[in-house]
Length: 277
Image (cartoon, rainbow, N blue to C red; front, side, top):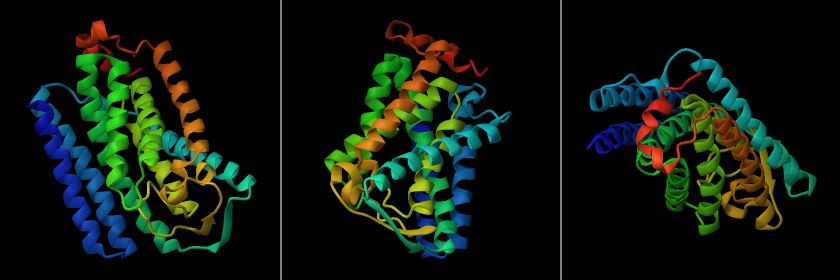
């Protein structure tokens, strides 16, 4: 029941936020406000429900160093996506046609902040954390990564390969960031930075969602294996490669810090979670 109450709390806030964004009807400032408020309320709701159901300090969302961790994660997400776009562009499959809209980028700031926060709370903060207690790190990483990928099959231009790519990229990368830090701030930052770079800066599709135009008016063309096709660059083999490399880095760091939980010790994961330094 602890899992159920936590999922319901965050999901309810996420749903309310989606409705608020829909009511904003494309107004960039209202979308920014609705998305930012959703992110703040989701964090507050998660803290409240975890305290109520688990009777412990919410160390995964502790305040000290949160801003710095968010900033580092955001820069890492932007840099990773920029590396993907650079490689696609070097093959001549990404073309900038001109400037997009600043207003579009402003709206995407709020939209992507809400998406990053609520999805990380649901998939890493709740699902991964509880599954890891029962199965250990590796099984939990694979299981929740697959679930995260499959959840993207509901997007407008979804594809099976796109869902698999998301499971490998985001399922591994974002979970690895959480395992290495045992905090949610870095994965939230990476998630936000990647998504905002994709739509808000480089003007590409995000997970087949048909997202609004950002700062650049750009198009991709060429083999789907390189560009990701209608799903967007997240379906590119470059995205899979770079995210796998980053995932390996986070998991190596987690191993060095002693934060991987073997299956036989899964019940002791709370001891690992408290390691924040």
